[in-house]
Length: 385
Ligand SMILES: *[C@@H]1O[C@H](CO)[C@@H](O)[C@H](O)[C@H]1NC(C)=O
Ligand SMILES: *[C@@H]1O[C@H](CO)[C@@H](O)[C@H](O)[C@H]1NC(C)=O
Ligand SMILES: *[C@@H]1O[C@H](CO)[C@@H](O)[C@H](O)[C@H]1NC(C)=O
Ligand SMILES: *[C@@H]1O[C@H](CO)[C@@H](O)[C@H](O)[C@H]1NC(C)=O
Image 1 (cartoon, helix red, strand yellow):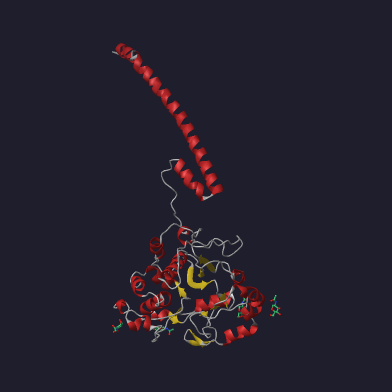
Image 2 (tube, protein in one colour):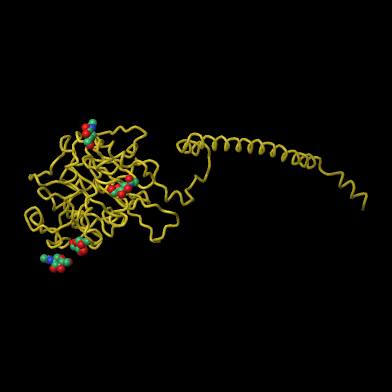
């Protein structure tokens, strides 16, 4: 039996033996190939990581495309949700932007240290001639404010990289004074500013506005206020109720119709109300046409219906209508004196948190470009910055 067993073992089919040897040799070559492949992969990854670190996000896209990485880097930390967008330019349409901006967290406590900021929203036609005064105003208060500029799409502002206005333009579209597109621009500013979760208050200013106090005072005044500074009153005359169109009922009836200055300060909650609105917007777009000026009625009326108890019903922007006419007074070089500002500060009486106050207007308009030099000269003495 044994004799037969041995030959049987020895007498294995030579072909089989050869194959076995081949099988032994094959993994070795496979391993070699695999090792080479692995080395290449590691080298490639290292180069990728290096170039991403070195050249930033843009090259991530090309790297990801050229290699065959199955899982692109997904934002997996909190930072993605709480850091403001690094670039204000985006390709969202208004519809997409408003949808995105209307996101509101339902957990009210923030899981990080949130320093509330004021968003200064500059609604301008062209340049910002009083920019240097604002630069002076903002200096030293980094982290407590953010800036957004909406100018006519045809106009390109050129700010040096040292400027607080540098890269702060938002994508804009055509706006015309007195038409719905004015409110569209304001909503666009609000929506862009809402994308930064730390923006808590939103102030609309124009290129002719100036701050009347220093930053600290304005910040604390707004922070401590129980109300938002949206002008809103019931004007029974032809420029108030006279502009109401009965077709707006029942969404808006005449007793709910309000008027107020376009220049507002509102908190985040009100800003979301404005951006998410699809109820009042179509009514105003259709039935508030000149001589009904939508920017004087839409937000005051809507917010007075929705959350009247959060409104101060007065604007925080001073303006002089005493000269009469359809437009408020504009102040130029010759007007800028200490006497002038004594009058501006002296004439203030209002309610602040339901108490009488002599600080009512935080900003003033309208100031011509020629007012810049004298304003820079007296700002530390008169304006407090
Ligand atoms: C800001 O102005 C207020 C009142 O005018 C003043 O008391 C305060 O010291 C000023 N703050 C700074 C930082 O200049
Ligand atoms: C207007 O609306 C208010 C509140 O909804 C209501 O009390 C009032 O009767 C309405 N007035 C008219 C004229 O419809
Ligand atoms: C503002 O006016 C509304 C009515 O439109 C009122 O309910 C609210 O209390 C007023 N706000 C203040 C601070 O008086
Ligand atoms: C600056 O203001 C002071 C008064 O506050 C005035 O005497 C001086 O002429 C002004 N200088 C310029 C360059 O306007």
